[in-house]
Image (cartoon, helix red, strand yellow):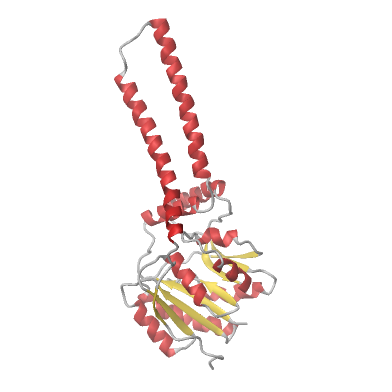
Length: 313
């Protein structure tokens, strides 16, 4: 059985050598026919230099360097396209995904599963982030057309069928959590304790997390557009109701002095609602615009050596 592990990297110089050592020890226990595909997503530190050194020392370590930072979604896709194995795994380079779990995950493929996913338990996470995370998944699962599960990220093992299905999806705006769920197949889940990052800082700022959440909501359904219709209808009814009340009050009590505060509040509320609806429509139009361009998901600057034939001693 050939096994490939895809590792997207962005400024992971401090942890990359330790990750390579742990992967080498773990993968040897699984199979000698393995490869590790390291994808440099436009790093600005010495990540690419470390990748070259690892590939020179061990031909089973290959690398793909992208011409700039295209984002983690594009980096994972690049790794999947360059992997040359029957079974492909995806994991992060920051050692928050324990490589030692791979042996247990690969074994589950023999039980008929096509996806084996590692789910972190979230212990030790700060309560504000845990609260926001739970709220996101609760809202997202009410809106999107696929199931998103808390604690499940990109750390997983995929069969050849699952990889082929993922590569057949050519959309530009990729949200991998949703894509993994959308392709279906029998999926097994393994729980593990949350591991904190040892080197460097997380690449996920609060703003990027918000953008990622928006991507998740709008990538798999048109419910925000439908919600905009309902919201517009609701406020239209409220406006007509308020107009009827003002007219009835004027007939009964006479025409009072027009209310400046009421007018300004009405303009502000309805103007804000219109801007929100236009923003939702604009988000979908922007995605359609990008899809019609048919640009490649990424551009490769440099490739590591091709996979060696046969296993190394």
